[in-house]
Length: 262
Image (cartoon, rainbow, N blue to C red; front, side, top):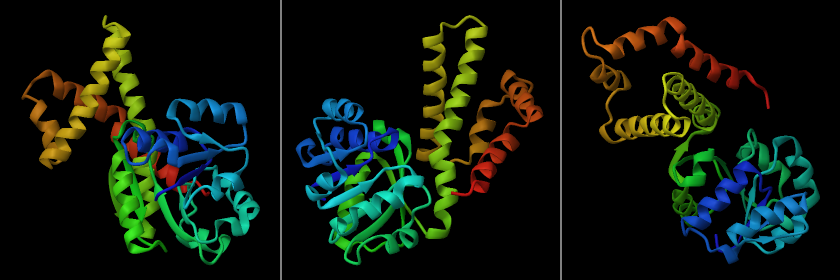
């Protein structure tokens, strides 16, 4: 991955570009990007020090690895427009639903393909990067790309049939977690905390709990039990959450994601 081109530099593409450059995985001068709105593209590229391009073909020509970060509903049109310009390139798709099997017929025969499902915390090096096991990258090339993507967070590999649910949990999860942070902070504000303090307390508590689970491998129920003293205050809050159906609501949210057809 010597030269990298982004086709699309929205929220996800921008998070990946920022994370790779800030983490030192790629040099800014080796990265270029194309998006249809020139002023927005230039504004996004400037703080990262990467090169904005006036056309997708221009960006692809400058790179050996192309990262497709466009919306799923435009990806086929973009690939048709690029055509043979992608021949011999490594193509990484982060477009939802466009896995290896779906992408390969849309690309030149010599293009190599990898589907990755990232999430937005990649912006701060704390993301999850799900690599589909099925791919057509060269082995050494894939290992290098996975190593570089580790600058964005946790790199994991999943078989094709689990990419959908993996992405539902990790890709949509930041939105659900942000709602938990917002709700906890609102409660803090209700009882007198300044809002910045409430947000910081809620965010650090969520981040710390996740880190504790990852590093200790404790069952989440055991972590919960460790905070709940007999007859104490926390168990009263847990009871209230159970009555409100918090667990079922989160499971329903994932179900709603899985039922959405791309």
